[in-house]
Amino acid sequence: MRFDVLTIFPALFSHYPREGVLGNALEKGLIEIHAVNIRDFTLDPHRTTDDRPYGGGEGMVMKPEPIINALESVERLERSTVVLLTPQGERFDQAMARELAGLEQIILVCGRYEGIDERVRALCIEREISIGDYVLSGGELAALVVIDAVSRLVPGVLGGERSTEEESFSDGLLEYPHYTRPREFRGLRVPEVLLSGDHARIRRWRRAESLKRTLKRRPDLLEKADLSPEDKVLLEQLRDQMQEST
Ligand code: 6GU
Image 1 (cartoon, rainbow, N blue to C red):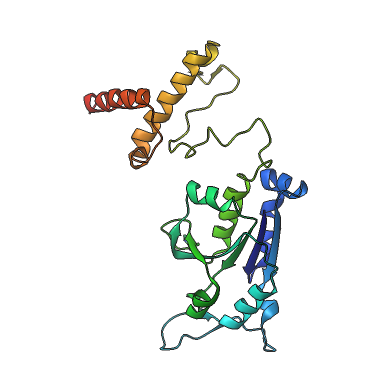
Image 2: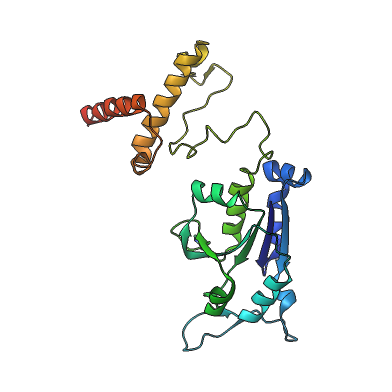
């Protein structure tokens, strides 16, 4: 998977991805991240990337020429897409990450200031993505979020034993609680079932905890979740219990 990031702050893409899971993926050559400095594609001596909005108003607008020139400098692979990171985009989620992970190349355009000239959208942008309903100062953090979430779905990135199958959102539910040693910490014990060695019982307990957590914290997720008939029975019981306790 190759990421090409168009930004006026290319340095932001050199540190975060070098650590941890992404760092390993880069070292193994499973992903590549190329940051392209939009300022290198300006045409004036002041290297101007923004200008005042036609029609007046607050803030500055990113000029179209440097962005388009930067885009045209990027080598396009066969299965690629051009994404604009903007709070006006489609909301990013795990399903979108999975879809993007099927591509060979994602070109991420990071907007700054009040926005970018609308003609960039019209000419080049294939898809617009937002990472949530809040405003960031620029698309760079959002681009890192997309790079991270997509990269860990690229085959080989997580290695054999760590799978994305059991993670939150892969089946539409939140994850069950995790414990490691010691067995007792500051008076809090690891649930007995996890020490039982009874794998069927452990699996059932974890599923129930996932359902419980999702019901309490993100009931909206249950509508789209991948639920078995046993899950549905369990969920009804949990709902009844919650009713009783209120
Ligand atoms: Cl993609 N960009 C900006 N500037 N703010 C955001 C965002 C993107 N997603 C959420 N907030």
